[in-house]
Image (cartoon, rainbow, N blue to C red):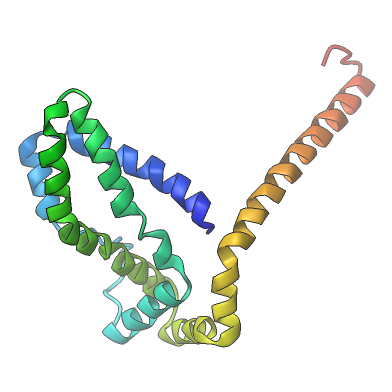
Length: 186
């Protein structure tokens, strides 16, 4: 996905997560902070370690992991204004605390790579994952990953224009056909 799309999505997600976290009772917030990130369970056995390693390679080499990287900084940026809006005297200590906790949060953010790897490993065989990783690690695969963000940015703009045009065309055609059926005020 494009970096700017993911950034916008990430900002919304970050804000939502901070708001949810701040509304929790202290005990439940502490329990949530100490529990490991959930690995989606679809009723299948745990994939073998070699399959998970191949899936992790796909997540990293495909560029998918770069979409997870902005989440921790975006969540961090949301915390300061959330808590200092009504308690501005906390700003200095809060920023220092966030700085101290940054390595922990970054480590926690890396869990998303493992979650994505589990999802891939449950949907693709080890051979398919290795073939996919081989593509992304090839010169053409690396080029694909490199051009994907700007390409997707262009695609989003083109899709918005196409959607508007298609919507207008559809509305015009539906009106024309409804008029033919005697519905003049449609």
